Length: 424
Image (cartoon, rainbow, N blue to C red):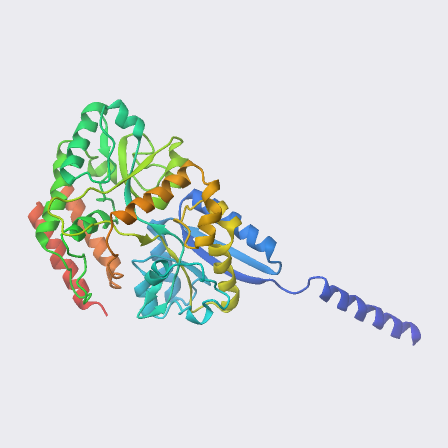
């Protein structure tokens, strides 16, 4: 009997000891993002640092390219299977907030999510109807990346902040003549990209979407003016033909990276990946000004957000990771502003003396853009992606000469306005 009691006691002691030494399951969060290989590697390194500094937490990474990201998110949302923390974009955040797929973060502000060192200008873009749905991961703007060595070889002056569309067109033609290669990867005419057109429209004091969200908000004549530049330079072989453009699916095979073009339109945070892929120093320039402009077309944009989804079961843990991501100096040294210039003033100050040349260039172009920009337009309506799909379809019809420029403008407006009017 005594031996039996002793054995039972021993087993109880061993079970208790095992419980104290780590039998508890870790708190696991799913984190999803889009990005290139540079971003993927950096984010995984940050995850490993978080897990090291916070024993008992596990982050499961899920990532893909931009081209497949939103279809994947839509499928997960339909199945109530979104990741706990979702990388979110300014263009789509309204859609996800209004559909209830992401939650307001206001209850956590300065109660787990420290935003005391963040200026309001960085916080406001993440708000929908007065509530905070996304934590801004960095300041960003749309620019040209270009190869200064190619400009020098062609004996062409590098862009300055006050250059005009006329000077841009002249620069492209000179680059083509001097280099016998394409001048630009696609001046914002890229697949699934509306930023070039948006810049042009904003310069004339208009915006892509009407404030109602039920129709487009600009004069069709601006569509014709903008895409005439594209079609004319494509015809003259200054821009790449459509079949070549369709082959560009990543940073790694971008024509600027592969030395088949001297320029490419990019978001500033992408310059890290472009430099890494190109293996040579690239520079950045603001988009051209318009002689008829009534305001600056450039604007400072949140590069992306982190949002917490309705499917997240441990929201405090998700907040803990987001706070770590934006406020930890060591994290931001790993990220090297690849997602944009950090929003925390303390982090920016700590990083200033340790930036590499690419980082300095990014901080400088954001400062320059701030002096040549106007306020960002409101987030686009939920049907934004469908409008982008229409633009892409119409654009390539024009490039392949299936329809004329005027027919393209009419088709784009007719189809887009129908989509916007019928959207819920």
